Amino acid sequence: MTMSTCVPEMEQGRHVFEIMGYSKHRGMGHEHGNFIRSRIFSVGGHNWSIRFYPDGYLKADVDHISVYLELMDKAKVRASCDLRLVDQSTGLSASVHKTDPRMFIPGCSKFAPQTCLFKKRSELEPSVYIKDDRLIIECVVIVFKEPRVFETKLCPKIQVPPSDIGKHLGKLLETERGADLTISVGGQTFVAHKFVLAMRSPVFEAQLYGPMKEAREQCITIEGMIPSVFKALLHFIYTDSLPTMDDLETGDRSELIRYMLVAADRYAMDRLNLMCQSILCDNLNVENVATILALADQHQLCLRMLALSSCPLVQWVLSWEQRGLWISKGAARLSWWMHLTKLSDVNSYEKLVVIIFS
Image: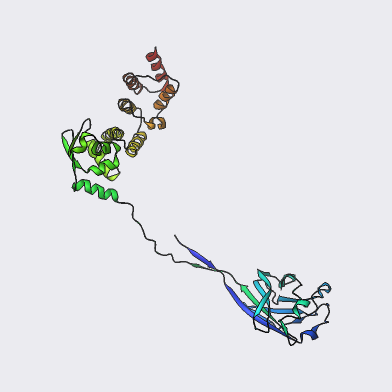
């Protein structure tokens, strides 16, 4: 990621216009040119001046004095100004008219402020702003130039590595350090940590820390599971990931996933269950769908992947189920599927259904 920053470029200047004999400039009238101009001063590379109208700019403004900042150049300038009067008892100035940044353009837009009524004479003349018949006008001009854009150096970002707790727990399983449980599966033994199994599976939690007999034993036996499947299950419990299966053939890999799906259902491990379903769904086809259906029938699994499959055979059978024509018994259903997987088109499916239901 790169970053840049924009900052305004500006130049400020101040000009003091001192008017001696203030009362003696009265009566100049309102004709063109009836004003007093200050000396020209420069701010931001441009020339400016102050216009002072003792009798006001217009006849209707006779009760006011008029003061303007004027751009003397024939160029467009973006600027702001603050016209102030100086308190002659303290030497401090107070703002009377302030103009926000705007474009000064030769012509009628070269003046600021945009009002003739600078200060009422009845308020000005008895005030601290006039002393010994002297009036001091102060003008602060800020000229804005093209903004400056520059590259910003980013503070080095601290790279936080991904969580490696799975790596550490996997090493704990591998080294068997602190293991307090021996598990026998199909004649093969595994060692594990009770708290890890209980943390990952509510079934193991009830079995190892509940009132069940196994909670008081250091060795338990798991029936109905292949050792290689339990080894893969342990790997997932400790690392939250499936073991590598690069050394397995496609059929063996699919078979292991199916058995792990059954194990995930048995031990209420929802994440593993969905992972296995996702893998099977990605590889679902006419050749293996009967086997997967048999798995669902045998273990009462709710396989969402059937509804997600793009296999025409699967979608066709599901449409029959929605019409209430689904075979209820698992054995008959499996037989039906085994026949269907050998057929090649939907017309053949229809003919077989007629035979089965007749």
